Image (cartoon, rainbow, N blue to C red; front, side, top):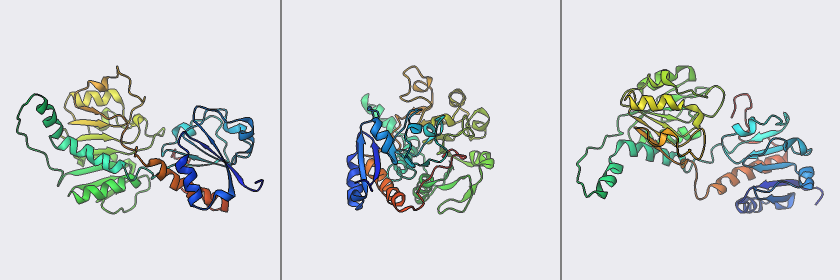
Length: 319
């Protein structure tokens, strides 16, 4: 047992990860501790853990783990980890980038259909036994602009192209992508905003993207365009968005992420004209732990074999 690497799974749902470790044939190479999120690691666990998987960790914890060499975050966003004042410089930090690929693109497309098709209004009219004939707006021929063309954006682009939409967008390191007509650098965001009938935000939370969508950028959008945020709540300047929707400078917005979650009951988004509030349903999937476990086990094998890890966080970039 002394030759096994000590792993701590700090999660309320460890079964998928334990099963994946067993299926990958790694069980004999590791000693595993599991710990519910509400509990704190014991002194012995802190002393022996070499690899950690967790959703988040409190400040002051990581420096007390002298053998820790790798931490796997359970989400794609790692702003909480990077905000830690004592995040060890030498610690390898990986995120769960790409594990929303089976769910988020579908949910984003559902949001597109919601704003383009009058099904929601028909449901409301049904409650009053009202027959109101409306004409659905086509997605075919419309332009979808994606700010943050990563794995999720690429899959949304594939589906959107199949619907006959033109897709453009921005990427930190622009390069040709399948199903995307134009891939531009972030400095040309205004061009994407001006051309798009729908603007999809998939940007990470970094100092550069805080309040990225403000009154000035909203003014670049078409009055008929919709904004969809499935990235991070900090990307949008809330008051500016509420004003833009109220003043019909844009058609409206579908928001799945917010600065504070759950969204406070007194937040103006709840009652704001043209704003659709979703309770952060874009990424969750009934089997998501299995998807994260697949990535974790791939990385665990790499960790044990001394190979480069996947989805390593670029601390300078912030994701």
